[in-house]
Length: 65
Image (cartoon, rainbow, N blue to C red; front, top):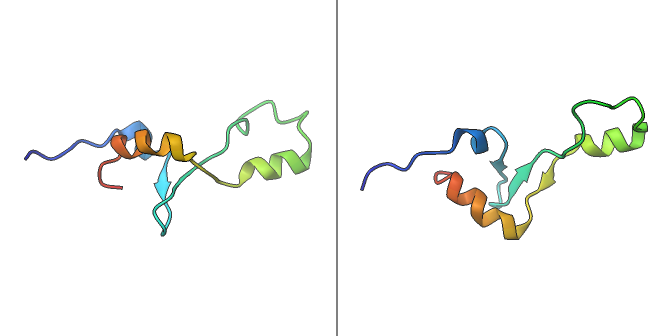
C-alpha cells in the first residue's frame, strides 16, 4: 500500500485532542472586530469541537491524525 497524503489545508486548521475528538478554531475572529463586544471576542478566541457529523470528513482528510 502506498502512503496516504494529508490535505495540508486541513492539517493547518484541525488537531486531535487526547480523547480523539477534533478541535477547530471558531469563525468571525479575523476582522471587523471593532463593533463586536469584548465578551463575544473572548468567546470566539476559545477552540470548539468539530461536529460529529463533520468529523468523519475531517478524518478522511487527515489519515494520520
